[in-house]
Length: 256
Ligand code: PXP
Image (cartoon, rainbow, N blue to C red):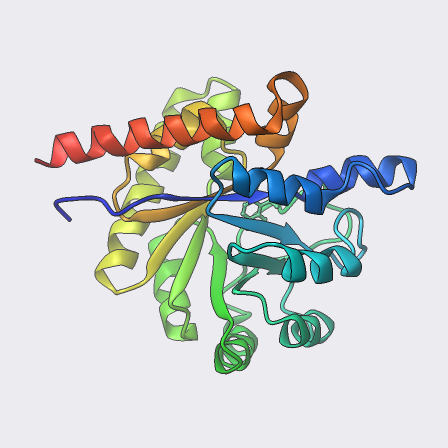
């Protein structure tokens, strides 16, 4: 891969809804945040409609679909209810994620082994309706192979373990996790799968991830919304875009 392709930034606006729901009113409005994120350079918007509706709600998804002009990536569990909503709303993409009621955030990748047959049915059903399906998976070679067998064309690597290791200054574990992501991305790309990545990314880790040439999209939420408190959403997205561009440029330089 001599010239890494453009790296898209998907902005996850879930936590604008978390803040709104803390007071039970209408502000801050996640759709307003989505429109601002797009104006600031986001290539798409991601929103996770959880079973317990703890942040994004059904009417947010409907408004996002109506009001934003860039691709909408609908994160969802592979349940009948969510598939019905996706088939009704027809987002550009659905990212299938595991969901546990008790978790604070999506803790790991999908179980693409025991869930293989069910995920295959859901992937085919959404794909037939024109929704691009991605599977949120652990960065392992086995998970990549299983995703291919499920029929996914796109996968998103869970970067949480890597980011967590860096946060705790566990450098050996961080290096190990990054090596896993790189190896999984190389295999996936060789098998014709489009690679995305996300979870826990910040300016530093997004720049490093941008240096992995097979990855074409990063989905980033919590850090950007938190940073927006201090410097504003527009500035946070511009700074993220710059970090990603720098990481990409370094990757391109080391390839040539
Ligand atoms: N990608 C997926 C599939 C996710 O589930 C999440 C978290 O909702 C993200 C990306 C974004 O993670 P974060 O909010 O930590 O940036």
